[in-house]
Length: 260
Image (cartoon, rainbow, N blue to C red):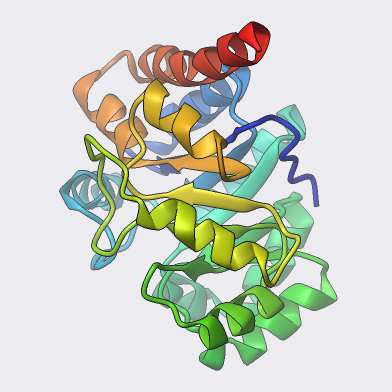
């Protein structure tokens, strides 16, 4: 695995693959890497993204209309891996993986040099086959924890996690928010009692101030809806617009470190 969280905070950037098309996504991802992202979550579009807010739902619809599939996303990911050693995670709902086949999915991750996956609607209790195939290939298995997770469930989730733990900053669906809740810091502190894996906080981070605030207590911040919305608002100029946005986030962190 090439997941690297040495920056404080590291940036995990989510991109909906295929929005507006895979060729543009390829350029967006490379621009995001060049702008300073540490890990890229390659979002696989799905017809019923129940965990996502309207921004990512619209992006998924556009990506599906452009003909994007899981296999095509993996093919693009392999091209990105040949250009960069940045961390790459497939972010998908379970259905596309089941259609492809869990073993075939794990084989393709290994063959293309992808570091692992986050399957957003796969509970750990039902993940036996998936975990076995991923572990054989030493691939990261990233799971979500939420403020509503009990201590017993946190222990169970982090025991099966590899790469990093994704801490959801609040309940509800994805989407940028003006303020982060206090639940995020409390959740990260609870997770740290059970694992030494890096903890990334996501859901709602959209400004340099929020990015820096997360860095006070977590290893990384996940930025998704704000990036996807930047793509949506800048047709024809998506890679440059995303690079500018990501640069502001990362730049704020570097200025803060220099000041201290």
